[in-house]
Image (cartoon, rainbow, N blue to C red; front, top):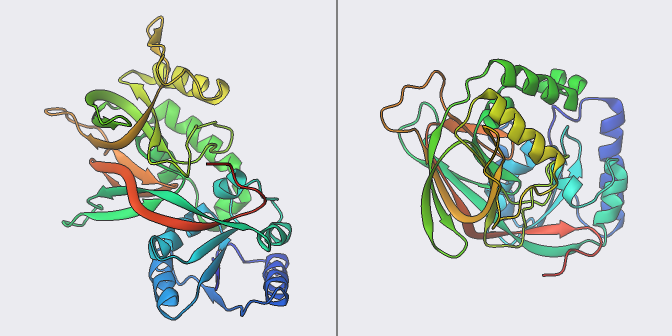
Length: 322
């Protein structure tokens, strides 16, 4: 099954690329079916239905957001997932070291290794819903200003015209005008110990790299690499973000720097679970947004952990040894 995000397959050139990929995979011996995702939130159910119908391999022609939605229907199913980079960020394809050209990327999947990767799990109350919901993620999840950036990023054709520039412009506006607000984190570390911290930014990464940021995650591990910034002001967040982006993995997990002057450095730790919630008795200017794989899912509370379910990922070339 090839899932197509119609918002990203909008030009004759891209439609031609999809047709060429379908012909390539068919010539390799597969029975290929093409299906458009009906909406941003329907892809998971479409994938779940396709698994029930007997489809065993899925290729997603879209961006990381489309992959995120399809994963909801494939997690724990045993079906195989391949990624074709038709989006803006294409973080998953970046970590798989795939070519940016979708057709060239498809060639790398023909002899790809099937590797079961672990998935993150995020639980929260979606805005406007009383019941709790959960999602699976592959890239990262967290709370803070970065989630507000995902919420402001232009969608549809405007996002495609702006490309990554849209995120940089949005990020600059947020750092200038968006409130930097503290919240409470309850952390369960890799060794099972726990602590409670106060942070203003928290991102639990599951992949090694997120664009230019070397996040230090591991998709085969049973932990998440948490980057968090202690409660600070606007300049403190700018300082921490700069060092996160320019300092590779930043300070070692067991040797985090605390502050430079009055400005904090980012902290890095391995966690099995983190729970984020508002500080008791504090009034917030804007909601504390929560995101996973670039999709804003809710606000104010979240529990982020490693799921027991796995995903069979088509990994081009030789995957990292584990």
